[in-house]
Image 1 (tube, one colour):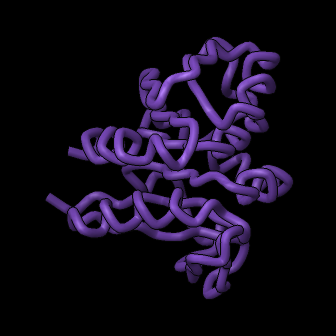
Image 2 (tube, one colour; image 1 turned 180 degrees about the horizontal axis):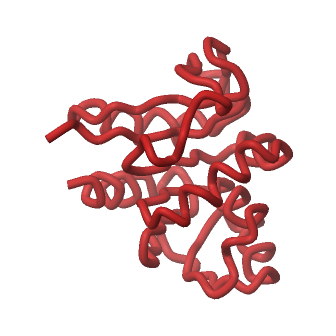
Length: 171
């Protein structure tokens, strides 16, 4: 059996720990994580300037069908990504496949912009929760909310349960 592959959508000013913790745990478990940005080979810096990431692939060169799960770290990255229809459409197509989508902190902003949150149980950063609720989501202020193929968490302190749930979904 081929090892699982995770697509990680990322732009600059991501929340450093929300990339580092899941990335390190996933790759440590032998899972391939492709960092996907606007261009391949682009160096992105976290908002706290603690982490940098080099994009492996451009959004133009990837297909949701080639991945087993989707990871959307928070920070300012999701707000930048949702302004680009290529990322929004990638998320829509990924969700239609029913594969795991893991979004933490501001990550659910991409799900919101894709028009996918109505009726879904989820969480996110406290300021994002009101936007999700206004769009019809069943928002829960809990460290981890699972709803079918979605895994959502609120903040860096939730990364332990968030990452464990993502790993479990890939087993």
